[in-house]
Length: 147
Image (cartoon, rainbow, N blue to C red; front, side):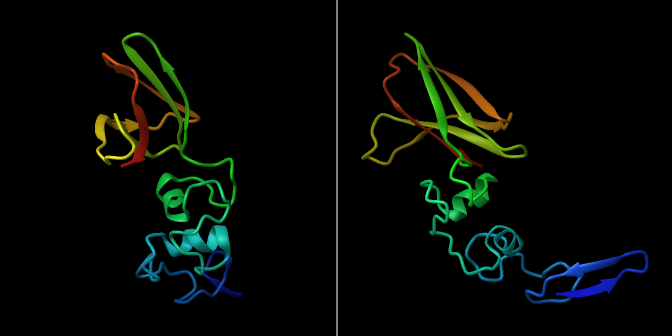
């Protein structure tokens, strides 16, 4: 660790490349889809990969980076919490992180890979987000993705 002064205050920085006090030219120098500063914050280095799942919660590190969740906490993940079906609608409730925007999607099958947008541009309203989907047949699969 090194220290430096900006004239008004002394600051500490951990050397991970670059010059203390300056932003990295490339926030993702290891090209794994996650900002290096985020990796260092949560893992202490940039050795974790995008496909790893450090906290074993079923969400990859890169998915947690995009969702804004804590990759070291298995309770912190973008998840559908509850579906509330009625005769003509389904209320979908999911976890969310402030500053994120979501798309709610539906599919009649998990095997054909076709997902249709139900609603886009859904701004997060932590801790729980909700959208009611008007449908003729509430038997469907749902997922939430980060825009």
